[in-house]
Length: 176
Length: 185
Image (cartoon, rainbow over all chains, first blue to last red):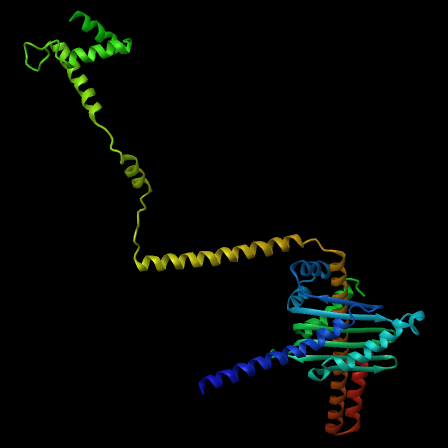
């Protein structure tokens, strides 16, 4: 009887682990699927001492670099429809990726933070809340702005206030 | 007697031939000079020589047995078995275990530290990653600010509705609205 209980508990833990990993897998698989597609830029940021040092150098702001220290992973997919591409393969990829993102990414597991629908602009910003107040543990942004598509996934404990300050910091440093 | 003394002198100087040494040994050992330990008959100056030659003779008689080499090598190769008690043994095992773990940990640290130091130079790929990541985070930051802006506006509207509800006369509400518009512009 005791052995049976231990076995059931073990299977339950194993199943939970598999399910939790499968959720993360959906995001990873999506990004990997389009990582080598024509007209798509894929960036996978996993903090290493060298990269963090480079970040600090670029931002030259202690507050910004402190916030980034809490980020454990950033995955980015960007695509741009150029005039001549609109009807060809990369133009089709652009639409396929956007539609697939809405279908394949685990959007239902996130909470809506912001949704903008305005002309050719269609932006969804989603987050997973953490136990800490005003901090998110994951962010997902699916933004189609005219001919630009950006899909960004950020993992790590991020303070919304600090992230909000970043654009001002970068704006002052002359970033895009 | 005189000859003997002369040969002895040369013996101590190391100038005697093998034949002379043999003759000397024969003369002294065979008591041909009537050397005895009794005083009076023993020339005192030859007494020490007699003892010396007797010693040589006696040493000559000592022979090594056939099993001497075997015994000697057995002694050399003999292992000393030191019995350690169990407490000491277990302490040695523990210390060895800790030392092994520390060694592995230091090894890993050195390997990773070496890699880190090696990767300090940013590649073009790294620079691109930093650029894109910062752009992506800045974009998210813009949207957070946009959301905050809207929330701010919504709170003003909400407050306005509350004012309408609570206003006792239209002038009071108008003043409130004009104040907001003044602030906004």
